[in-house]
Image (cartoon, rainbow, N blue to C red; front, side):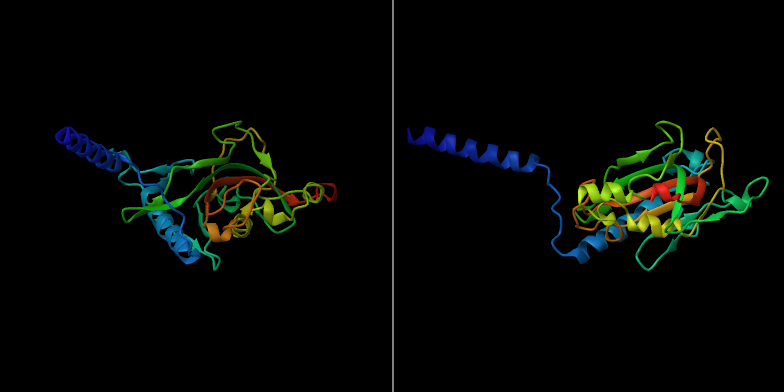
Length: 243
């Protein structure tokens, strides 16, 4: 009887050990905000090294195929970093002044209403066994692969005062400050037809500290970093009835 008990005990310990080995380690958000910011910075740099822009300005990941061997990494496309940590990349040949025929771009400011073709993804930078990278993307907006039509003032860019007041929230609950900051580095087209094929103007990468950080927000995306790939089809002063 004693021997049977020992066999059962040994088997139980073996099963428990095997189960422990098979368990997938779950990422735990660091308590120190400085660690979170460091994760974002390192993961975003890796993202820029692992991706490039195709002929229409879409962000594409490098593959094992030789077809993309001559493409330049995002990190080689003169990325500019703002004091907030926001990174923007202007795509050569895709700005209003570069178009055929050239046009005068419209400056984007706090009161500018935009109509945009955009792919907006969010990511969580994680660390696993010393490897820091952006996780799988989530979709915030995608008119490029979705409706195929530009959208005016996405919620994360601008929310009307009436909506904010009704919800008892301020603009920072909805709007991504880092996106607005990055867009000010670009000019928009004056009024492209909605049916025009897109030619994306560039990339804005917003680390979590320049987005919602750890604050409550409409999208429940605390600690998330964002990547915006876009073209501004129309930029005008926002009409008074749209404030």
